[in-house]
Image (cartoon, rainbow, N blue to C red; front, top):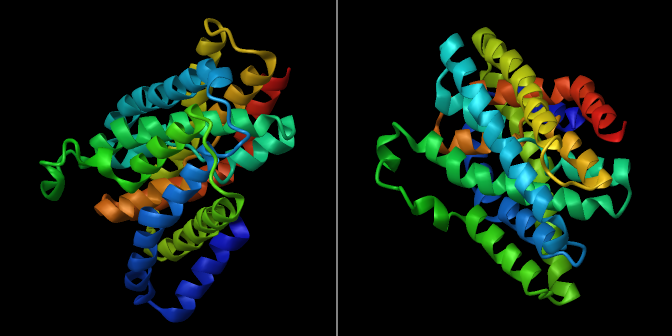
Length: 289
């Protein structure tokens, strides 16, 4: 991950300031096409079972909501814009980091549970999280229901429909769509590296705060849910891993689209993923003990 981010930064340094404008079109393609296909193919995969993961889906949604709730007073205390700080705390890196980590930690069977958490996190972020970002933006003041028609929400709805009705695309078509969806992961990381050119010293402060608050708030909520939800041993481990993940790179893409202090969100994402070296092992220890 850091190699890809570093290449994006090096390329931006070589090309100069104009590269930031060039990346706007690339980010739009990622938001409208590639990332929605990543969500759809994950949910429409033959390995995803909705009924078996109902409690885990609820746990993922509550961890995301609880993290945002705990992060809100932190943002107020330090004087951060809630629209910049809280949504990344609600949307962790359960896609390009969480899915491969789940497969490595829990084996091939763990991937289905990780997809369930991925779906829950997307559901919370593209409803509550996007509504938080839209507040105070004149261009989006009347878009109260527009987020339901966003490519990401439509992809999630379609993916859930395929999963619940056990529909499967022809293998040839599915592989093509999955290849496009997988392309958004390195592209988002590369775009994050480009954005690092705009980070100033003050952005590093909010980055450190986000890097700590995101996994800590998630783990606090996970500990409470562990006491009340009837999760299996494997699902319990998945929940703790999910809760310890850093902010998602996609949060930066959304901030870029809304022009909601993308430099600060980039700092949160970068330092958060660096801090994952510490917090993810803690989450795995709690989940596997």
